[in-house]
Image 1 (cartoon, rainbow, N blue to C red):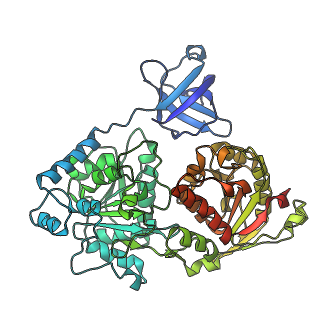
Image 2: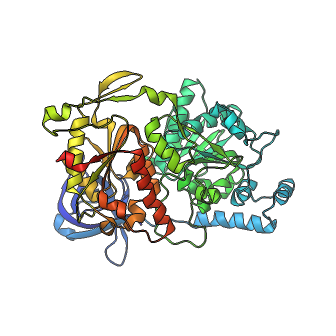
Length: 569
C-alpha cells in the first residue's frame, strides 16, 4: 500500500471555494499517492477514509488534504500516517487466471507446436497467443508471412502493420529502444488495423501510459483524416484515468464497450480481465510491456485473439520488493527474452533506429545494451549544441574549460562519506547549469538559446533531487530516473551522488542498475553529462551480476570524454 508517513498538522481552514483543508508537514520521503486521490488514516485499529489529497508541495514538504466535514484543528491528532484509498482488490484478476488455468488443463495443452495446432482446430478456449508466448515459440502467421528477414525492409512501420494483419491468433513482441518511436509505431499500427475494421484493446501499467498512446492515436488519425469510435474506461475516483477527444469518449461504466459499436477499448487490467471480454476483440496491445508481469499479461491477453507486446526490457521495469518463486517474478519481456538483450531473429520485431540520440551517445547505448543493433537516424546529425567555450571565463565560473558539445562527458569527483546527498556534485551541477543556459542549440527549426526545458537533471535519491531542485532556478526539470522514462532533452546531467559502494543506500544493485544507466543516458539527444565519484569505480562485487554492473561503468569511461571535478572549484 502506498503511504505518506510522519505527517504533522499545521493548520485547518477553508479555501476560496469553501473546501475544508487540513495542512500538514511530512518527513522527507518519496511517495506515489497523487493529487486528487483519496487517503486513509492508517493510525488506530480501523483504517478509515480521511479525505482527498488536495495539493502536494514537494519543495516545502507540505500536503493539503480536503476533509469531508468542517472541524476545529484541535479535533485532529498532532500526528498522522496516511495510506492510499484501499488495498487493491484482486478477486477479479485471480478469477481471470483461474479461467485460463482451467481452460488449459481441460484441453491438456502441451508445449509442442503440433499440439497447439491441434488445439486451434479443436477451438481450444485457452488462447493460443498465450500458450505460444509462455512456451517461447515464434509467432504464427497466415498467408505464408514471415518476420525472419525483417532487416531487409527499410519501412518498419508498414512491415510491422503487415505482420500484425497476418498474425494468426498468436502474439508479436515489438522491441523499441530509446527514441525509436515505439509509441508512434503503436499508434500507426492500431489505426491501420481499425481501417481494416479490426477491434483493438489498449492497456498498460499506468493511466498516463494508456493516455499517451491514445493521444498519439488521435494526433495521427487527425493527420490522416481518419475517424473512429473509441472508449476509455475511466474511474470516478482517479482523474488521471479520464481521456476524451473527438474520437474517444470516457466512461466509468463497467462493460460499456459491449453496448456500442466501438472499435477501440482502452483500460487497465481491471477492465480487460472481465470474463465477458474473453476472446471478443481482434487485438490487445500492451504498452510498456517491460513493466508487465507474466500474470498480468495472461489476464489481459484473454480478451483478444491476438496479443501485441510493445516495450523494452532494457529500460525501467516494475519496482517490486516481493520474492517470487522461479521465473514468476519476471516481467513478461524478461521471461520471453530469457537473458538476451534483444529479440531474436524470427521471434519479434526490433526497431533498429533511434531518432533521439546522436551517434556518439548511441554508440555506448547500442554496444552495451542492444547487441550493436541500434543505429542513429540521419536526422540526429542535424541537431547540434553550439558552445561558446570562453563563456565560463567570462562569467568568472572557471578559469579553464574544454567541454565537448556532443556525446558523453564523465566528470570524476573526489568526495567522502556522501550517501544520499552530495553538495560537491551539486556545486558542479549549478555551474554546469549556468554555463548551459548561456549556450545555443541548432536543429531543423533554426538556432536558439537553451532553456531549462532543454536540461534534465537526474539523481538516484530523493534527498539529492530535492536539494538540487531547491538550489537550481525555479522551473528546473529535476527528478529521479523514474520521472523521466519516455522523456527526452538536448542535455541530461546525472549525479551519481554516493561516495562509494559502502555509502550507497540499497547497495550497488540499485545505484548501478543497468536499466537506470540506460535510461539516464539515453534521455539526451546531444550531450549526456555524468558526475561520478572515483571511488565508485572500485566497488566490490559479490556475484557475477554485480560484476557486470560495475563493468558497465568502466565501459562508460571508454566511451566518455573524462574531466576532473576539480576544474569546477
